[in-house]
Image (cartoon, rainbow, N blue to C red; front, top):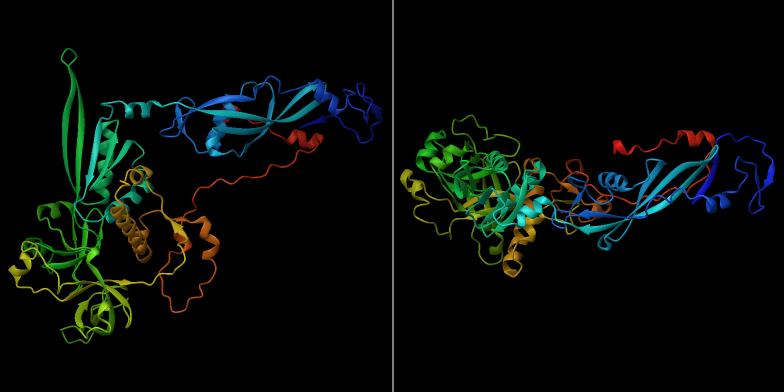
Length: 526
């Protein structure tokens, strides 16, 4: 589309005939109408309409050079495409917008608006469409990945447990701090994940990040690949074996006697409240807490005798606060969530079958009410290894019938209004042929999402994003009465980065003042 802009336009111009088509127009410097001027002059004739742009199929980076990462319809990709257009140095670039194309079409369309003075005090503005053809070209990093003997160091992260809750949470921490940015490849293993790096210091930096997140034990090894005796140079491959402590949140653990005495003579039977660089445990019978750092744990290692897969649902029938033995008549109270109480519970599966009830002491007094559902470890029908409960026999402690872990919240039937990002390299590498294992992983992930809704401290360590499709539905009130559900407030969610197509404004005839206000785009600043 083209239009005529005159710099010295007066309010009273005579009407003349165009010198070519004899159309009545207002007088201008060229004495030519805009249609004839368009046919006679084309300011975009020296600008090619098609270009070829290179993209790596593996990492989706674009060749500038160097290779850069840019999303579709982003300002980084816009700057890359504009710098490939030749002929923009002698004209005025006014605007540039993206035109939506199919992602699989391998075409990028860019609409640019340019201005150029063709005659004395006559400026032509024209909009043209530039097409970029995407061609696949492997970048240097991807070439080194697919080449044999390319990586320099590998970090093998392992945890010997029967679930993946730790890796789900560790995945969110890695995504939040972009700790995997230097990883050349990520492979999924049956009991862990392997991270490959092109440089040794990148692997060491990743190991340092893991030490700040989870308690681990590190072993390193190196293998000689090649050597040059004349220059005294050697090429090694380094392997870092990271073993995460087999203890997770809400696990029931039995502390070794020496470790329990060093922690203030705490009870040997404890519950794990949180796991970070150290392990935090609580005695559910006395409310005594302790922190076990990494060095102290591996000096006296232990593992969970019961994990979350063994949790069963119980119903609370009665609650009575525990009174101090000193005689002051006050109940045990530590913080807003924990309070020592004595409860009477019954299995949900026993309703209508038998009248078996259990009495237990728990630390969940401030969150439990009569009629609530609570998740517990049933120790009456559990079978333990003799070495696991040996510390209890040494101090003469008998196992209780039931150990209460946490309250079970009811869930709404509608979908969540939030989501989590995932590492595509990990989830795409899972074996698809094992349907039963895939179903178990899906149930574990749903259980992990439910745990995030219940634990605010756990949510504060990761990034949670709003689900755009469900944002409007979540604002509507829920009609279900008596449905108690823990939900994540919108203040804790982040807006996911999305690109929306904006309609371009129609081109209008510019006045002298408006034409002077239009600033050209500087390609050097992009």
